[in-house]
Length: 323
Image (cartoon, rainbow, N blue to C red; front, side):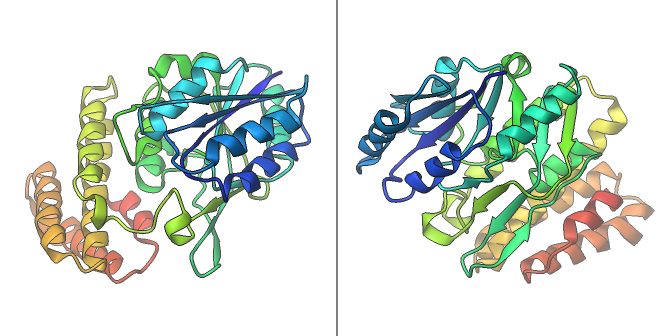
């Protein structure tokens, strides 16, 4: 079974080798590694080419290419054009994988003998102060947890090539939250998902300016709201039962409220207040403004907003219960 790992790279000449070394250290073979330089202005392309020259082998085939449209989605779609594996692993150029990651994916796929579309694994988040925390990981209610926690973030799964072909690929117009949007779009297709519940096997870098993931929201205000609107429309147009649609739309409006709280936490009340009002009004309307909203859900939503704005954790678990 051949796995293809696709990594887009933009101005990571000083970081990407660390990521590539963790790919090279994989205990599983055969692998295809597709590296896509995405308009780098530093020496990233040369670093990738040198890595390919040093390590390309029959059981570890390294392909280096370029994509001129400057979004990670476009680069990943370019990588898919060159992918030959039956299973695809998307990864970021500043993160790390445990040596047994691909072996774990293979083991899970073989265990189900072709009856799987996605394999999801645990991961660790690394923060600017060096602290580490395991990312939320759930084995049920996956669409809700994708909306709230982005469990199918770029680095956290392998996907069957045949299943991925049904998705129309990455949305290459989105500069942010493109993996969140893709994850929801995949889950709306009802994939067969396996969960590897062993120790975390992916390390995701959240370490400040060097992180692809980033640490703030207000500098790209408007982009996040656009993605939420896009996903909301996808859910509303899906063939899901009406009761499920209503719940997921409420969770998306709550996600909008979370974004508003993050703006407020960053000191941008001019961004936070109108967005919070929009989210609360949408949630109120979905409950008809009745007694349940006035006495329970509305006060709880406002409480969660204030809690997130103060930097407190755990709000999403409460939201999943009340919405």
